Structures are given as structure tokens and as C-alpha cells.
Amino acid sequence: MDDFWLIKIVNFLLSSLLLLGAWCARKVVGVWLNPASIFFLFWFFYTSFPLLVAFEAPVSPWAIAYILSFSFAFSISCFLFRWPVAFSINESKPAAEYYFDRPLIVTAFYAVAGFAMLMVFLGVLQQGISITQILTNPIGVGGAYASKRYSGEIVASIYSQLGLQCCYYTAVLGGLVYGSRGKKKFSILMLSFLPALLVMFMQSAKGLFFFSVFLFLGGVLVTRIYNKNFTLIDRAGIRALFFYGVLALPLIIASFLSRGIYQLDDASLIFDRLRYYLVTYSSVHLPAFSDWFSERYFHDSLVSYSQDAFTIGFYTFMSFFQLLGDDRFVPMGVYSESYEYGAFIRGNLYTIFRGVITDFTLPGSLLFAFVLGGVCNLGYWRLLCRRNSAFAVVFFIYFIAMVYQTYIISSLTWLTIPFVFLVQWVFMFFLMKVRT
Image (tube, rainbow, N blue to C red):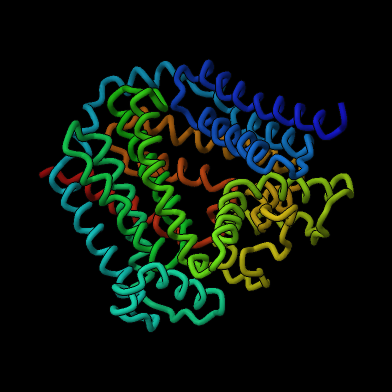
């Protein structure tokens, strides 16, 4: 057996230990729906899927072993909480319908969704794109907007900013209403994602759509906790994910086509370009992080990287540093290096772990994981024990979305996330306190 296949087997074994870690956390807490199990399951998928899809790309077992170590450090704080007490308190809460399927929250959902779509539309018009272009060539509009973005021609727009922020609020409220409602939910589901879909098509920006999906799922999981249902996914959920995944795939492909692919004459070139985008967006993060990790600790890599040391939180909490006046240069995309292997694997997605290790060193990053896990478990404890805590609700929802984004980078790289979290917390505090 040559080294390639031996390393592949070791990598899959290490990835499977993440699944075992999720099960262990479930045994400690008592249910699958807990922060540690969720973190483990995300990273089981984020390691196993690229190992299959980007099969030919080299991945160091040491990189996956580090991810496994970080995940276990994140989960250790599970032992510090008396979970049976929290679940007993949660049993006395009214069902989710009492808190979230109330007229004021439903009205706020429809109002925010409508406002978000209006602002997104006006923001696109402000970039010099006409209504005629939108109606006659909707696929081309996304490409035109993306070209302006990459060339630095985007005009600062209050409409675009409001539209983007309201997309987050719409997804959160939509998830809470959808999860707490017994029937007549399809219109809620569609409207929850319509603003983000407009952004994806008209601005060729897919990140907001995927983040919105996990905000929505976070809202649904919160309602499950209120309804005393601690399953992460059941058979009906698997069927629904498959159905909506099949519906979403053509929309994602159409967004890629908007970048000018549809103008290619050769069908094989179109297929190759689509494959490049799909593989790069889903799987480059693991081989890229592995390559960076290998150079940093074993001096063996395909790409030469800048090696900052002990930046004391800058890459993990960049938005807060910049808010406080830190003006050090950061390239577009944060990292200037681009990993490349073969014809279909290229990108600068290095996971949250590159920034965490750079900020805190290797052992310091594991201590950071332990503290972060403690904060997340404390937030989950508060969600179980408090009847009407808007902070706990919003914290858990954004935890789900931010864990999803760890395969890309820290969500706190952008000031948008802490800002919308704060606004959403205040908004939910008002909506949950006022009875109508």
C-alpha cells in the first residue's frame, strides 16, 4: 500500500473520531441537541466531505488531528454543568408557539422581509443597474454587480446595508415562526429566504444565503428546545433537507452562471467551470488549511505563506480591533495566498483555525477552544433554564450560523455580524416581552 492510500485511510479514521466525539458529548449532556455535539458534527462533515470530493488533494493527518483536538477541547466544559437540572427546568416552559407564533412577531417577520427586499432592490439600482437590465437579463445582473465589487466600483449605499442586515433578521424570525407553527408554514419558509435569494441573484453573493439558512435552522432548533424535542434531525427532517436541497441546487448553479459562465460557447467548458466553483466553494478549506499547517510546523507545503506570530486575537476578532482603530492592512479575502491543486481546487479559504493558531499559538488555541466551549455551553444552559431570555435565544441561533462559517473564517472578521446580533437581541427582547 503506497503512502497516498495509507494517509487517506488515516484521515478518514481521524474524521470518524469527530463523529465519535459528537456521540460522547451526547452521552454527557443527555441529548444530541447540544453545542459540543453540533460542533463535532459540523467538523465531521467539513473533514469527511472534502476528503471525498477533493479526493486527489493532499491532506496531512496532523491537520485533522489538530481539528479533532480543538473539538475535544471545545467540548470538555460539558462536564461542568448539571444538565438534568437544566432539562427539568426546561420541562416547565410553555411550548414554542406561546413565545414565537404570536401576532406581533409574525407581523414583524412580514414587515422586515418586505423591507429587506425593497432595500436590496434599491441598492442594486443605486449601482447604475437599470430596471430594464433586471427584467431582461436577470442572470447578467449578478455578474455586472460582481464585476463592480471586484473592481472597487461599488457605491456606498445605505439601501444595500439596510437590505443585507434585514436579511439576517428575516431568517431568524422566519425560523422561530416556522418552527413553532404546526401548519401553514410553506409561505413562511419561502419568505424567510427570499431576501437572501435576491442578494444571491442580483449581487452574485452566495455567502449571505447560506448564513441565512443556518440562522433559520438555529431558530427552528430553538423552538424544538421549547417544545422539549431534542433531536437534531429525524426522518422527516432528512426528507425535507433532501427536497429543499434539490430545489436550492439549481438556484446556486444559476448564481454561478451569473458570473459570465453562461456566455461560454463550449458546454464542456461550462461544466468544468461549474465543477471548479462547486469543488472550490465546498472543499478547498481542508487541503488549504492542511497546507498552511504543514508549512508552519513541518516546513512542507505547496504554497509559501506569511507567518505572523501571536497576533493576540486580531484574526479571530478582527471587527473589534478595527472598530477600536486598528488600521493594519488586510488584503481582500483576509489572506493573500491562494491554495491551488489540480484544475478544480483553488481558493483562499483556510478555516477559522488558521486565524486562531496565528492569534494564540497552537497550545493557546486549545485553551481558547476550551473557553469558547464554556461560553457556548453557558449560553445553552441559560436557554434551557430561562423562560423568556431573548439573549439566550439569539445567542444560540447565531452560534449555529457561526459554527457553520468556521470552515471559512471567524464570523467576527466582519463588523456586520456583532452589529446584527446586537440589534436582533434588542429587537427580540421587545418582541418577546410585549404580549398581544
